[in-house]
Amino acid sequence: MARIDAFLKLGAQQGCSDVHLAVGVPPMLRMQGDLLPIKFRELRAAELEGYITEILSRSQAEHFGTGHDLDFSYVSGDGGRFRVNVFRKDTGIGATFRAIPSQVPQLEKMGLPAIITKLCDFHQGMILVTGSTGTGKSTTLAAMINHLNESRKLNIISLEDPIEFVHRSKHSQVIQRELGTHIPSFAEGVRAAMREDPDVILVGELRDAETISMAMTAAETGHLVLGTLHTTSAVKTIDRIIDALPIEEREQTKSFLAQSLLAVVTQVLVKTPDARGRKAICEVLMMTRAIAKLIQTEQTHQIPSQLQMGRDLGMQLFDQALLAAISAREIDPDDAYSYASDKRPFQKYVTDTTMLPKLADSPPAASPASVA
Image 1 (cartoon, rainbow, N blue to C red):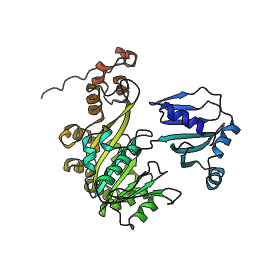
Image 2: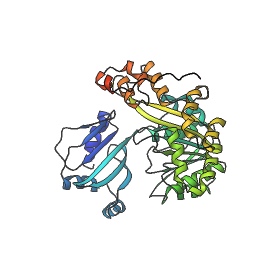
Image 3: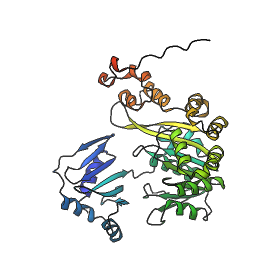
Image 4: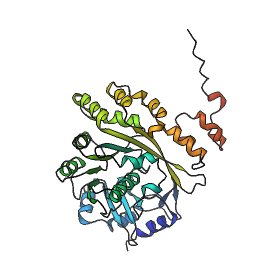
């Protein structure tokens, strides 16, 4: 058993989401969003390098030795699965181990909006799950793939960096391909997948213009495409896609979004009232004629008002979802306050009054509009 497995086992016992190892500090665990050190000495450069070297293959060690960061999946001695990033910094190397649950998540048990399950009924188009790092995007997508696998007879091709949840084919065939191991890039993976009779293509990250373009082509030609972006709202997601592609393709991109984008689900993880867990809170955009027109006329700043009014279609703004979860006592109101865009409706729920703005710092109330 590799020496690093002792830290990973401790993290698993504590229920952490990530284990951080870096030279000059003790190992740290990400617990419900907070980073906490364990009782251990500060890691020395040679010590940590030895820990990491033990778990690398020859090709991984050679790649890291050339100065590149390294992403891979690792199975510890006791069977725990982790997504790993190894990097260099000023004092030496560092590594982050993201724990991957052994069981593929069940969509129906995750407490997500019901519309996300209905999205799995589509046969063609693009669905994006977005959010910053560590907000549960991969878990939501894995649950969607699992739902498709259990309910439909499809050929599902998943392109990942690295492979996290391992799917066993059930009613569907699930083919998982890993960046750097099976495919040289996400764009090449999508290009190859389109020649493999797919029904569903999952793209681990739409990280560059070529990948976005290939994913758009796949969605336009009769496939259901699932993907992620590191964007923090529906509007920012749409703007990112439009801005990522060459200016001469701007009109074509807007047309694609208006016709083939099915939905954008943006997530954050908010602490539960007992601080022992976190719940996914989602902003949801469903494509409608009104939103499509706003995209085509470059008025995306008006999209939030459509989300606010689209509750009957399954749409919601972050603030709406946060307030509903507070009312249901599903999340901690103080943590929710920190995520809210318009913080005023949340102030009455806050228990830590030091979070609230001082009266002198509060913006003056807007004067009512005059009537002509």
